[in-house]
Image 1 (cartoon, each protein chain N blue to C red):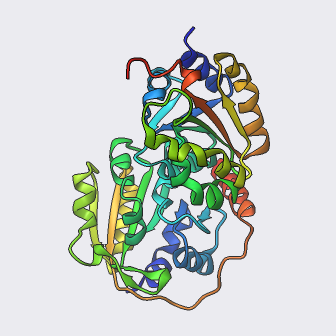
Image 2 (cartoon, rainbow over the protein chains, first blue to last red):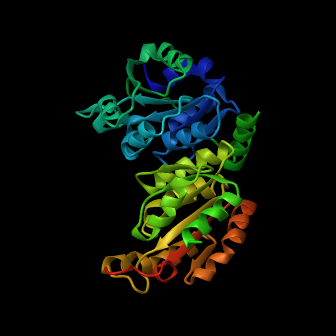
Image 3 (tube, each protein chain N blue to C red):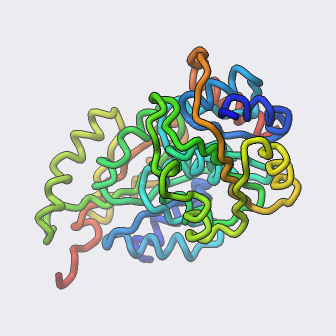
Amino acid sequence: MIRSEILREIAPILRDQLVVCNIGLPSQELHMIDDQPTNFYMLGTMGLSSSIGLGLALSQPKTVISIDGDGSVLTNLGTLPTIANNVADNYILLIIDNGSYGSTGDQPTYAGKKTSLTAVAKACGCENVVECQDVDTGKVLQAAIDSKQMTVIVCKCDSGNIKLPVITKDPVVIRDRFMTAVAS
Amino acid sequence: MSISSKIVDDFVANGIEFVTTVPCKQLAGVIEEVEARDEIYHIPSNKEDEGMGLCAGAFMGGKRPAIIMQNTAIGVTINTLATLTQYYRMPLPMLISYRGELREPVACQVEMAVHTKALLNQLNIPTYHFHRESDADELDAILKYTFMCNKPVAILTDASFWGGYGDQ
């Protein structure tokens, strides 16, 4: 499965949760598949989905899912020790690991070569790290939500993209709508 | 009262509950004070742009954030300031040690010091420079201004403000 197929499959799970979604195609895909006020779309700033999600999870009680990519986690690799050492049991980091920089033309990442983000996350001190195959993402994500324990999921999937429009919503509108949903 | 206590008192009085830090020798006292306060969740970050991401999340979760870092971080965080903090219009007080100013012993620090105000100016970031200890009397008003206008605001604190570098 490619990322957009996974997002389509887990959309019914995501729609009840606060979601911070990675820059580029992941946000565009989620926006097209199931736009919700509980989705925070990143329009820029590659690498910070996990950090924004952790800050949000530490600041309020609702479950937060950061959807990230292997390339973005590699960009901000310092995020994993911070996550490990600041446990928020309402926080799930879902890394869609397709081994490529999807939004920029599927250039290979090191996560698709010798580097295992699962092993990196564990070495950083993350306690609940689950690596799964694309077809199992929904099951694993729901189990992580139900466990009420901070979890890092590394979802191994195929590289590939669909054609879709950019998000034209104003960033302040996205943020305000999201904050209203967070506070409700 | 120490200047570090006064600064963190102003943070707390302005409802700041979430503070991320990247250390600097000059900031050691204020970071220690942040860590000691029960009212504040202190989350050290590994890089300043990561810290700004944490602060953005905290703000959207209803907590007032702040970041404490060196001025070298301006070079690291320009993209994050422009495309996250400013683009989504979020408040962020940035307490910054202004290395490379008078009394600086490390020559390389001057190389970023000469760019610091120009970069902040280019980014249209309101910037305050604390040179004497009494300059910190304005901190309370600066914090109120930051959360009024929902912008990142820089507070540069130089070596003279912190009383120099001691015996280096």
